[in-house]
Length: 158
Figure (cartoon, rainbow, N blue to C red):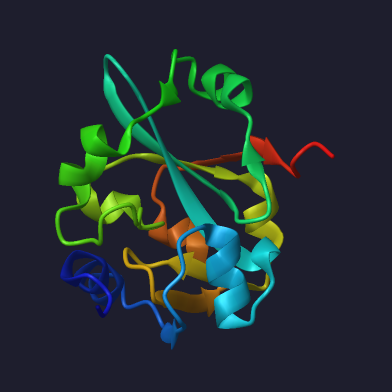
């Protein structure tokens, strides 16, 4: 699969420079980083949360784990991890289980871990299991209008 049409149109509409990096099919974000030959610290994965008011995607480095309590505090909402079958229809042109980092292209709000804002180069999960979007890290804030960059994740506990 190539970049989903919704993601590609979103990047084009914002005149954002990017390139694609294809890799062997992989499941987890860390496996994707390894398959692509890039650091998992620079791969942006999306984690879908929900509450009665709807969905939110938290963007975190592939090497991190989401701290749900931190995102609940930051959002002021009782968000919980969403089940894939509950959110897959949001990302209809994406592969099953592949959450696009550019969730605003689908009308889904995001919160991003503040560690992402400092990276010079980022690799965004595109919405399939074989493609990453490589871009200048400074462009991320422009692609996530209204997103808060707050501490919502960290390395997994040893």
